[in-house]
Image (cartoon, rainbow, N blue to C red):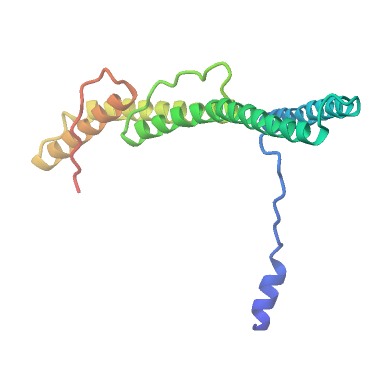
Length: 196
């Protein structure tokens, strides 16, 4: 390696990002819930194993065989409980992601949809709030641009005398109509034609 390269690499700090709690409320809620489920299921298994041990000591049952049955039942029960929890959790996360992906598709098509609030138990609320704010700001900017185009068109319509200027004016009118329709779905559709 050349000396100049060494000095450049030495001047660059090594950035190591180790922030694990990015959404503190969301992550801590589910970390504590999973920890509680795991600890509770182990406690329940321990209590039942203790009962099996006492029953075997009293001569009622074969301890080893009963312990294997208990382990099998506990495994299946915990698997079902975690599966149902996973379904519930992923529904609360996947629902908002699905809704936002539909909104992104509408934005890509040039429409600014009215955003509905999330369901009461949905997750990702902070992200959805930022997303909604961004969509509202973009919608407002489009409306402001449509208004500015409307004012400019009003001033320019009397001075557009050449065929080229009338064609450019028609293009601006189509652009204004398209912007209006994007923010107001009840506006008539526009056909935008580029001057280039």
